[in-house]
Length: 175
Image (cartoon, rainbow, N blue to C red; front, side, top):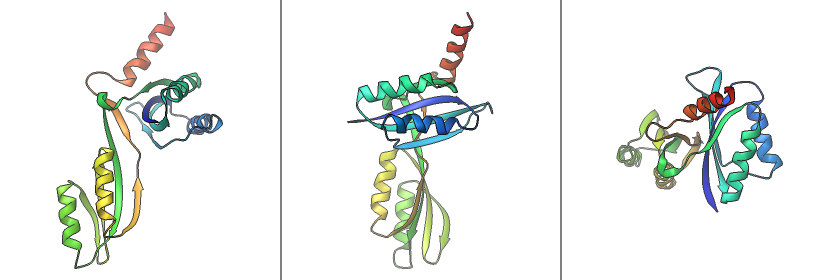
């Protein structure tokens, strides 16, 4: 079973996310992570969805997503061909005895301390999923009080863009 990332450009309208998640539910597929936000064009949102499955599952999901009315473009975001990042906010139990160790680990992983209190430290961690998983595992010994993850966001490397494909498809339809 592999992990796949799917990038979508969709109309920025109410109900689009609901229809996309309903498509996954109807077909019995689970969404591992989902990140969505407005693009430079306020009428268009970009989604990055990660799923686990086989190549057939991936192909079926991409085809089904492409049939939805408000989906402008859908494509796979391959690991080696994409820049991928995730954000984690992590609140760790900290006292005088371990505070410096946590801060040193945060510096090694190039994390930011965004809140500091007598009994906890809150960290902002960005990067590839493997780096985040390693840091989270390290912090378990101190006691994770709370954690929030964004899900993966991804852009294709180089000059290639999802928006470019959406424009090319629109031009092809107009001809």
